[in-house]
Image 1 (cartoon, one colour):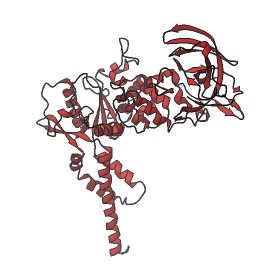
Image 2 (cartoon, helix red, strand yellow):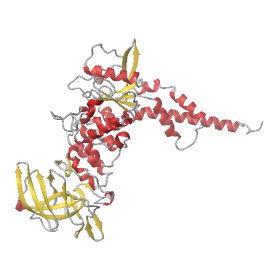
Image 3 (spheres, helix red, strand yellow):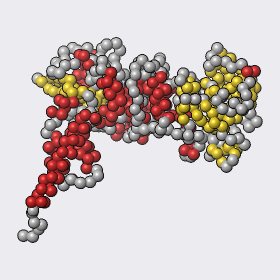
Image 4 (cartoon, one colour):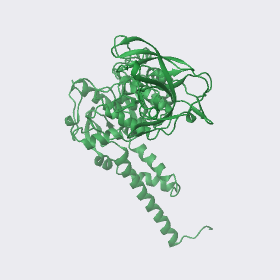
Length: 505
């Protein structure tokens, strides 16, 4: 019979290739458990028809799945997948498919009703027949994970994190988006929604007598829990699925469209979300109506959505959101990050105090040429926000509707008039110079041009300075951004004979 002769060299080469592949599979397997899976999981078992679970670590998971590398190696060796740039990625996807776990998304019960890390055991736990609400919720979650979604492992934020360990808490918060993304299924429990019909009747808004929206849609952490998982399944208050027969509710247009209405998140993002430092005002809008118990969490819960790294430091208060913006601005260069209004950060007046400063009115559709508009080299410096704006001096025409913390100022310029609700400390009219710093300008030749397609108003900061400042200082660091209730919009000619001015705000 014909064919290629078998030599000791070819046998050795084949054996070497298989050994290399086996080592690679084992390395990917170990790395995946260490870097891509939660620090601790609940191992779910059945005893006498009762669902039991115990808290286990990554070493337990590695031992439990110790046969997986051999299985994957056999499959890949048979396919002769020994070369190729994508083999490691394909092996990792195969490992992920084997190492299934369910992850829980829910609203915490008030007080101390939730089972915590200190309540867990490394031995199978038998839950009483008449458990407390938090224990009952955890038990049903574990039973659903195992019986319905065929997952032997599960993760719940209430009991799988040792919050007494600052290192573990830090890793957990910074890894949580990835843990939700890598889960086989995210089980989302809507405790105030009985069924799909009840979901369809809900309306977005602040919680109160007139608001009809499940608390799950206004909590900070559930935003990433909604976006991160590739598969999510919604259960109503009686633990009945909102959609029967579906394994992934991202495929349900009825659910996704309603959630889009409630959250302002586009359908495309609900179906498949990619994290990153893009579309900052839009993503901040998603978080604008959400609340967290700890003030720092409103920043920490956005880490994964923006795909940035942030040190966790509970006790820092609202500085956490300022640090989040600092990190975003290092990678974001579009002027629309300043489409906010309301209270400014105490650390920099040019930056907002919280996500709710990005109101719905701040995120209108921008022109397709937004990348070419405004200063793209702005940066936070030790002198403040360094940014070039089209500086248009204005005069106060009238002050009306004065309240202790706000007032309406009417301004006049040769090209426009604008009325602004100014908030914060009152400025004495005779001691203050005012200006509008236009952000969305386009430089055209030697003249400053704010030409944009259509008749879209231009956007700017309200600026003030000491009216008695030296003239050579008036166009630099003496200007300060003032707080306004709404984003300032002005209608102005296409071309203004001014050059962009460098400011430090």
